Image (tube, rainbow, N blue to C red; front, side):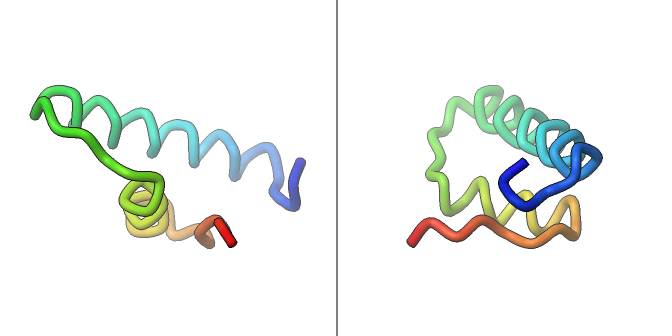
Length: 51
């Protein structure tokens, strides 16, 4: 799927959900760029290419 294995997607979904829940608890917004950077840090996987 889009050049990633199912296990990678599972890891990205878990990391993304955790990040977004943290932001919601802080009542803060975020950007796709911040989410992507957090996913790279938290999962060790390559980031997304938004170009």
